[in-house]
Image (cartoon, rainbow, N blue to C red; front, side):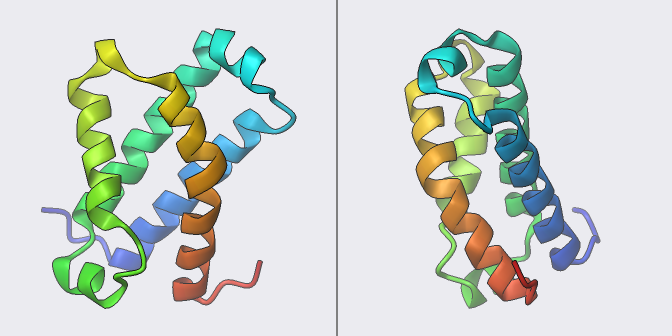
Length: 114
């Protein structure tokens, strides 16, 4: 088990979100779905997000219940172990509709001004 401070892990999550945001800036769904490199990069960063979330101690996860830790970790497991059956429509929905909220919550917990 990693001994990294949970805040560093949270910053790792934020860094992966930042990368995903960079990859999809001005990117329409039709281009995303055809762009293998971008999809691979996004999936890799979602895996990193899930791995970092998995290493955040249970007491911190309990303290910050607003973050869907188990869903984030579960997504990581599905991406890692089901790599031939990734549903890129679901990935698109996650990056467009769920990551912005996760980013806001983590920033609030870390007291970072946006």
